Length: 83
Length: 336
Image (cartoon, rainbow over all chains, first blue to last red; front, side, top):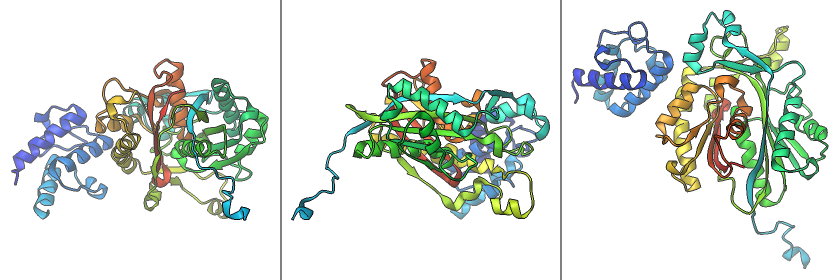
């Protein structure tokens, strides 16, 4: 099972690939919209790439509750644990 | 007994079909983002970043669905070197012809000087590729020799100028193709389908009967759940594109031109990435100056690539259309 930091780092790489935001800026306390300026369409791209990377399913209904990078990382951790 | 031996005239051989010519009619009013931002409390930058749309085309009152169809059809017939009298079927794909009956196709055929079979089809943004599939099979089986396929919309009539999700997207125009017999295969197999369970994602907001019962004076409008549509279009449709190439028997490296429905530049970019489209493939990005003209978007984009010399005769072009009803259709064609 990947650690929180490993998931964060891999998610940061995805965010970087989709939006060009430096991966080191993608920290757990950062808000996708307010801090990182990830718009909703980029968020969809990040989610789809994360689903593939982490072999989890993140439905549209869940996406709107993922406000921060930490929210997304803990969602992925829970989804992986449940799988 | 003759009945036992009759094949009812069905015959047993198929011939090849191809797109013989293309035509377009761009609605003449150029509407920059600046003209629509106030009603949706937005900005030029936001719209461009969100959709890649710099300006869109809206029709004038004179540019009716019929008038734009005839204009695009004449150009396609001339491009194909086919006379109106040689056309024996006219298919119009549209969701914005506000006369439910008769089909606008019959009026278009008449204005062109033809008594061909004529009917409309409703598959929203996927309409043109549905029409192309029908036309190809009609020609191959011998039901028709020359089929005129037209995608046409006046979405400005049914767009809510105050809806932040759609006001900046939709547009007007027409594109046409002439499909006829060919020595060489020119239209590959269609891959198509629908997901009506998700019909809610893009649809007409109100039933006409509700509009009348409510005493409303405005037309029903289109509504869309953008993020869900984005996800479906960019990723599910990329898989359909790959399946279409597989059915056609070519690899993505053998493709010359990619003409996806011009829904949103972000969808086009995400699809291209998802498909790992090689650099050499020309990607249609007509949406920047046209907006999303639904059923007209693919023929508009393809014709423009030909006019600009970016798509050449004989090129293999993958067309993929998708939209309301989550209906979709894709095929590979040879550029005429």
